[in-house]
Image (cartoon, rainbow, N blue to C red):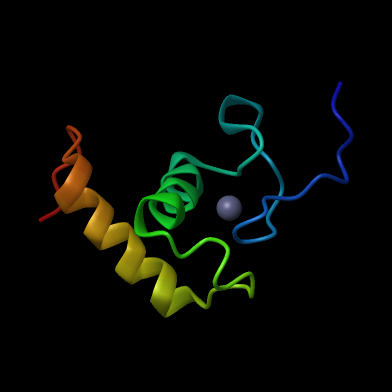
Length: 70
Ligand SMILES: [Zn+2]
């Protein structure tokens, strides 16, 4: 088993094996979006929840998975 002390680098929650090294697809997408936006190396500080929501929303528009929010 994995070391249970590992945490999601995005939100510091416990990692879910399906989404390693993140806790969820959401955080995996947020990490991706950082690379897309070129923001990754500019800001290594933790995001707050509001900013994560903004990232998540922008990703939904960009990736448009079968995840209707309504
Ligand atoms: Zn997370």
